[in-house]
Amino acid sequence: MPDHYSWLTFLLEHIKETLSHNAALLGEGMIVQGEPTWRSFEPIIAALFVCVLLLLVSRRVRWQLADVDSAVIPEARLTLRTFMEAFLGYFYDMAKSVMDAKRAKKYFPLIGASALFVFFSNVMALLPTFPVATSSLNITLGCAVVVFILFNLYGLMANGMDYLKHLAGPAWYLSWLILPIEVISLCVRPITLAVRLMLNMSVDHLILGIFAGLIPLVLPLPVMLLGVIVITVQTLVFALLTCIYIGLATEHEAH
Image (tube, rainbow, N blue to C red):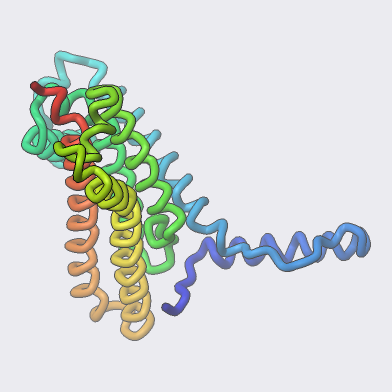
């Protein structure tokens, strides 16, 4: 797949050239052998940017909700507060539809944080020169591994050793067959989460950049509309699968 460049790519290249020039002035002993892969830092910086943006947005919304008397009255226009309320309310209702209300409330911090990070990272794909964190397998795999570790931890906390015993199946004489299948199925989950999100966002950002370079004003608009659909669907899929995995891991807790 061809590489796509953003303003952050050129900034990192400029930093690399500056450091190389300064190292040459200081002498050969200061020059590090081998050329660093500066583009590998781009997804990390983009992900950190999204995290800082989310922290600022959440702080702003929390400050607006601090006044309880005014917070109970919905605003008449679309603002940052109404967007966050509608966005998180939708995913909270989705979590309640997958699991009961008690577990949805208990595990929603992970579900809501995942949905916000994936959505805001995906939105960057609509900007042709902006880096997209979710177009990197390192970032999406990191998100998927966090979900994988936590839903297994939730399962152990909710059901104890029964969570591990169910991997062997109900019949002990079939455990030698069922256990490897269940373990493989469990370990494949973060890989499918990461690869699906990465491929869709990489292709979406690449296509938008190509069309924006051909006809900058008119042609990218339909592509951007399709990009909005891809962004929304991928956020829904990631959050929904997270809800399903948590619900399956903790289902005995509700009984």
